[in-house]
Length: 248
Length: 355
Image (cartoon, chains in turn purple, cyan):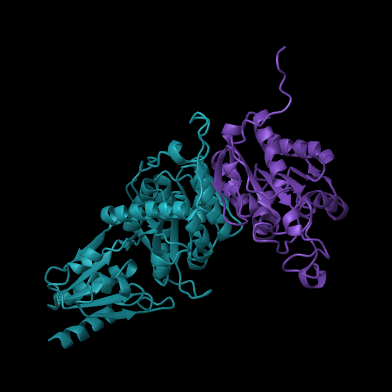
């Protein structure tokens, strides 16, 4: 009887490498989804990734496409510069909350407002991971970090920024959706959203943005499974999942 | 295209277009606004891209992404804007991406003023961004030279795959002169399929990564060695200098850019009075023509360095002549240009002391 393959490593995943991500980190799931989509749409060799500064800075070590490294927060500008010259190629940015919502706020807002025909994957885990657990713009009220040791106080640090809602207030962007990587039940939605964000670019529809709620068990100080529960109980109520903009 | 009367900023822009630059990302800042304005219209005519970025930070990152395609891309700005771009220029150098940056320098520090200055010599030649790297910096003294240097900048950027700066001052930007802009200078010399992004399919599935992150110190040292070896090659091949009446000169004026031109007038006038004075002018201020300065040593008795700043090039002049000739300095700052008579006066004082 012929073997039927039901599950295998995506072709776009580099053979034999293991990630540097902490146990339980959701970057691994998101990377895998990304690779599956690159395979399914057959776009691996016409796609360029823009690597951020943050935990995913080394993502080109795992995903086998062209990559440009961007300075902290500037990935949307780098992607813009590339895509305007090579509209026949696909480009995506992959950015964390410190990268996109703090230092890179200007670049993401203006790329969205020009509706650059790019795909943005925004990984929101409410904390600075790479630098060791400092407060991010998306850190929840009361959430403890190394720079908000008794919990984020809105009087001193402001309220967490809802990027998807904020960008959806602009007239130009094509597609904005928030999904989650915390539970198996979330993953179909996550994959569908990223795929749509790439398909939009292939159809020249303009700026597509997928915010993915993610965990950081190490810097949250939790077991991976507890971190997933914490995300569902605390992040989703403040950062509701759903489509905020969709120009069909 | 034959001799045409053009304003400096517009001549810079057209020279770039004729050099095959179809992609411009920039942000408005005085005194260079005519460059983006000209490009915003002209690049549509040649099927290129003009994009006004949200900031100089974004503009410099757009040329990083644009340069990563292997095409000819540029930005232009002025001093405070260049400061904002300096972080990205460090990345661009580390990532070995060819880009051209035109810097129409204005007076600083801070917001300073909008009149001509050379106060960013140090920034351009030894302080643009973090890390151990160099920029090629061309310093034109006339519009024709500016046009030629802008076109050469694209060649150099692609040959050596690195950022190249054309360091002008507000005089170059705002003056009008007749220029002849050579056409058909736009051959892509960078061989993008080899290293750029966007050619993975053509390369049969082999990708390119454009990066400056090397966490392993052995790897980073090797990368930096490669950049350093490239710089030594540039020093050997590209160093360039103008000498005017230096063979018999007792006093040689050293100057770059616009000041070289003012000094020339002073020299012609002093020569007619019998003073043996000459000019040495680096055409590239980075790499600096140290050997040309050293060659002055046997005959020249004194160097007068004249700049539109407080003497930023002095350290290079002294290093060039190996401290074997006395070097004095005359400069103006804040948007003031040294006049021909001021320079003549300084020279007369030196000759009086020499005799």
